[in-house]
Image (cartoon, one colour):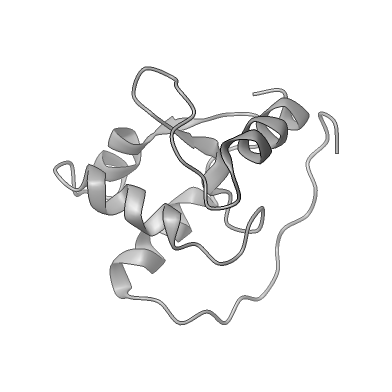
Length: 98
């Protein structure tokens, strides 16, 4: 995986709210090796005041890597939280060379 994109084009059947689906769909469009802030994701989905809700949608993502919430970081570039641990998030970003 180091520096090479894995195919994550999987059919996913996950129970979620419309908002979660909107966030997760946006996350799947973040290019391999890049990151976005929670605020940028909120703005990208047309909900600029929903930064905390975006963070919550990331925290409830049940499918790591396929829905790449590890690519979402805090505004200053800090890691922020990750459902599977911040060290794993850091490792995934390093593998992607983000």
